Image 1 (tube, one colour):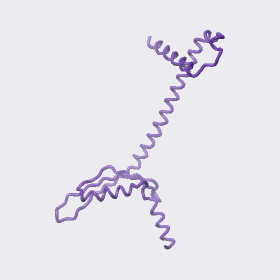
Image 2: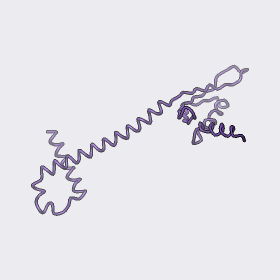
Image 3: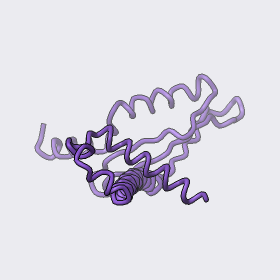
Image 4: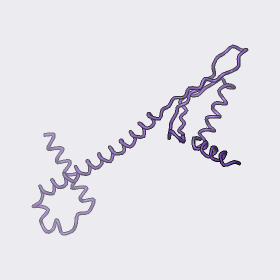
Length: 156
């Protein structure tokens, strides 16, 4: 095999989709004519040498023709790269939003605990109350009580 041939073979393999997508597409396409069927919204993502990653959506159906004419398949190819990129950005933004909501909830709990502990400082400063460190369960109980007190105070 010549050096030029190896180069072109190596570069042409870059666009082949992964995970058997090409095989599945071929199987779907081969069934269009014999079964008089079609398919919709078959998504393929490929990495091309000069233009990068592209996502296309494929739709196919058998064209109705006279009996003396050869069967044909209408194959529609739509570049949905921007749509796919938008979905990926949306997923990242949703994950970031969930982290921010969890952080805000945690800060609210801590603030409620501080308010509760400050309001009850005299009781908690007694030697028998603070003779041992607060356990996680006790702290959770303190936070829950603070939140309940805060909600009942705001609803009045």
